[in-house]
Length: 309
Image (cartoon, rainbow, N blue to C red; front, side, top):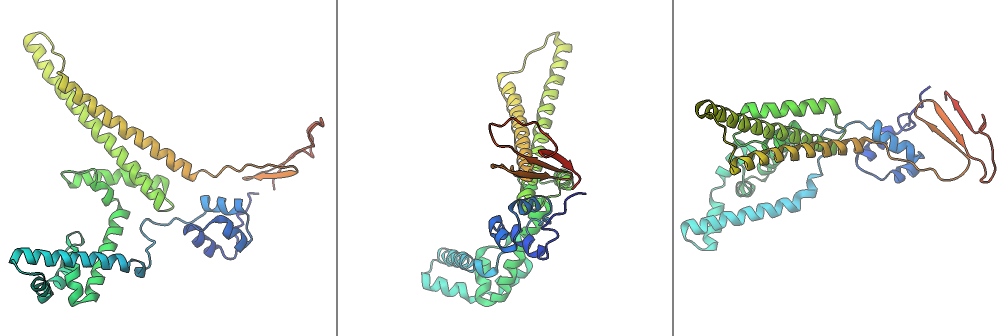
């Protein structure tokens, strides 16, 4: 019978999974829950429940210092803009910055997350801190959704930003996600990189084919009209070579990222040094024992046996 995972059968599996997902060292969990290192490592690699990208959020109190610095910088920029626009001193500019904050409160409720500025959040904080903090949380939620859905990485490959280009990239990403089923943020990021590399490969291969075919059609017309064919100019040849190089580079990134994913999911290698019996199993159990060096012994049932345990 297949061997039962001791971690899955443990009474505190939920706590163990949470600790493993948080990156807690295996040797600490080994002492705490009286489990083997190999059992914990195998469970982490094969049985740990997937963690969707963007789900783990830090404690809001941890970012208060950084948020306060950004709001202070936004306030300073607002004061400077008033000072230069109106030609007034710093004190008057600060008073003007505090005069009308209602527009900022309306903006944090109305404006899309990608259009909010630190100046607007800073002004809203002066009038309604709760509304400003709620707006900041909404901005972070939108950013998490954009990353988890693949739209964030899709933008890095777009220039014209047509719906068709976005949908084609997301189709590649969805196929990879369905195939690999990422188990956390690292694997999700690698799959995004894999989708980017494959999409870039398709893009530059398409450009190369389009330009080469266009040149060939143009030369066919010259051949039919004048009876001879002219080779491409050096600039055109360099452009074709550059497109081919970009496609090759994208292909290499694809293969390198794919190797990273395979390496990430590969179980760690275990080296066993010492004497005595070693039990190896991933299904049927293999028992291996060693003899003292210098003695010639023929292998027998006591040395190598295979059982269904």
